Length: 195
Image (tube, rainbow, N blue to C red):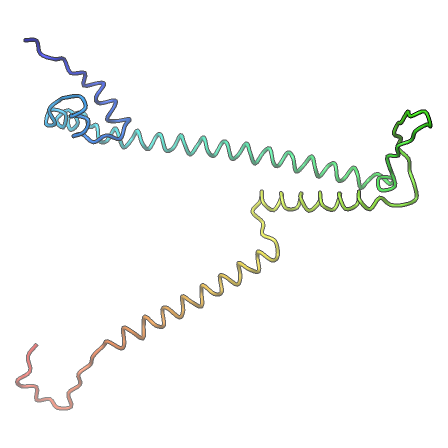
């Protein structure tokens, strides 16, 4: 009867990179638990598993950080482009007097032309204001800058927390002093008292 050859490198790799316990791994590969535990101890599989998990976590964090950095960079690029577009629009003296007019002939042919009128285009002004609000919101979000209302809410929450903390500490001090018992003797004759 030939003896089965056990691939300890394969079992070690599965243990180090996986989640199975030594007992489950031994059962899976049909090896003696004590033999597997001996290999594990001698070759420091547990330490290697911990190191492997730390490396995986670090690489995962790095990939997530890179993705977030790229996403933020893209948002910053978009905010700069939007900011430049707004600047160009505001710098153009005819920007809010320019209208696109559709013209046509009786024969059914239509075309559009750009014309400048003395009347301001209020829709264009509203659109620009909305774009500026969007840009402000984007910049606040990217730089984690709260609005005045958010800052006020945070101050109030912080004050509430501090008050609750003081109240809790005061109650704690009162409870601990309420359970304190002091015995004062007005005589020096303490004979008969023992601890």
